[in-house]
Amino acid sequence: MDGEVQRSPLPPRIENRVQVDNALRALQQKKPIPEIDFTLHTMEDGSQVSTMERVCKGILPLPTPVLSAPVTA
Image (tube, rainbow, N blue to C red):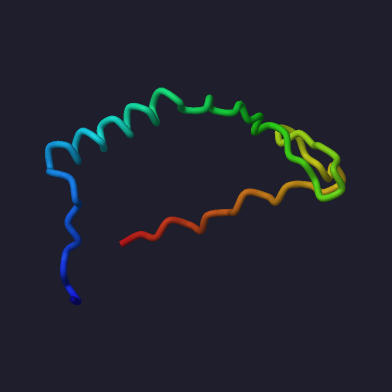
């Protein structure tokens, strides 16, 4: 029993046709892609903020890291 492959009761040609029909039906009945505005974020309290600007305007961005002096060989 273990390791046995379950065979479909349909002949391979009919089974392939059923799979193709199912795939075509899925493509034809596909729902439209929802339009998501990634520039808006909904906060926990329900308010929406723009991702294009800072939420906390009193906090300055971190300075760019200073690279060490080049190592000479």
